Length: 378
Ligand SMILES: Nc1nc2c(ncn2[C@@H]2O[C@H](COP(=O)(O)OP(=O)(O)OP(=O)(O)O)[C@@H](O)[C@H]2O)c(=O)[nH]1
Ligand SMILES: [Mg+2]
Image (cartoon, rainbow, N blue to C red):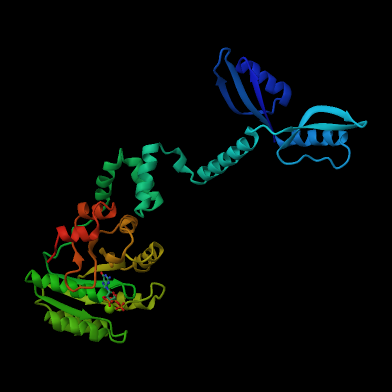
């Protein structure tokens, strides 16, 4: 690329000189007005490689010996004769040369980066700010964009998120709840927490455990049933579940704890299908760990999506990096959120918050521990 600076009395004159010297293909890199007693304009123009190559080729015909230019030097158009051989007069490179090249390089890099970001470029400044605000809170790009398009300003975002969040789980009527979810997500602990909270509200509670698979699982739930003073039935078949439910007929709330399975393993699903085949009215809570990665959350949801999931509950929110994934999953799965669990303590570490409070947590307005100080469940 050849770059040259032109000064003239007017832009028109400068441009015609650029065309004359560098040709029609020349591009203008910068232009500015120079104030003074007689105002002038300065135009920096460049011409692409081909012409340069052509010139080099022509020059090389004139050159003798090795005579290539050192860095920082440019060829002059003027040729003089020295010892009968034509040589170029070397002139120091104009200061702007390196700078302009660097700026061009930077400009190209920025343009490429912007091109990669696609739609982001087309967002006005304020919208771009909203988009990044949401993305920084782990809300998916496509959902962030949707919210950004709908919102007039940052304050609008909270309202939009609240509207998208379906919540409001309650236990005003008698319920049989099946807790399902991947291994170690917190099913047994959550069953115990729900029992404890229900007891606080003077409800009669019962526990059924289907987990005879994992070593120690029966022992774990037995300890909880003993501490909470709740009847426990261990069932290893659908018939035993049916019989267990009959025995617990006088209970306001019955929690069925199930075996945790790897979301890639379908065996667990078949066992659960048999329980649903009993035709007994049950409510299913799919537990998803808020501390797991978003792809894992999505996989866990997909694994159980063919079961009659009524509610999603997010566990281990105390270990979560952000709450955006809670919004992402509930919107994409189109399932309401029952509650969040936020620690290992039974029965206190469970929150039955509403969309306004959850939105505050998602948007990071209120940290979880502050929220818990303001809204003690105990
Ligand atoms: N930090 C944190 N830990 C939790 C929470 N809920 C449960 N845990 C812990 O997670 C671990 C697994 O909990 P469990 O209740 O046994 O999980 P599970 O889903 O029943 O496990 P499996 O039956 O083996 O599938 C235990 O150490 C719990 O104390 C929570 O909300 N926050
Ligand atoms: Mg368990």
